[in-house]
Image (tube, rainbow, N blue to C red; front, side, top):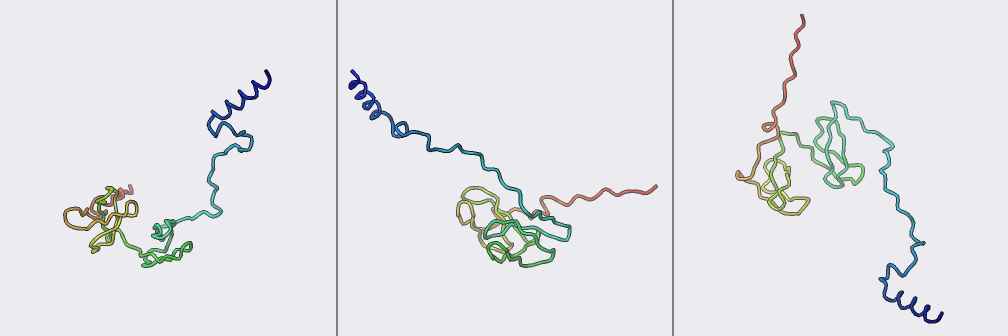
Length: 142
């Protein structure tokens, strides 16, 4: 009878999926990955600007008035554009909002790689026109 039990056990082992056949003792429990705090904190003053690197997507800080910013991570030289020098258009492939330098005939989407031609039919007004600057309330001294 014992032989019959062994054979049954072997038969059941063969019918089980591969993942159930092997013991799970070799697997370690997974812990959630928690992002580590940065060793340096970037503070941006009013005389500094920020942009995202076109090469590695790193956030860059630069002095206001700079025309070119070199990324310290990937060494890409990025062109700094002021708000009035940037156009916006929706991607013709995935409808994500794209930004481009004024005068560009087309822009390639970094998400879907679709090339969208820039024309009067899809051009959006500059951000400065879309969201006019709010005036600070005037304070009166009594």
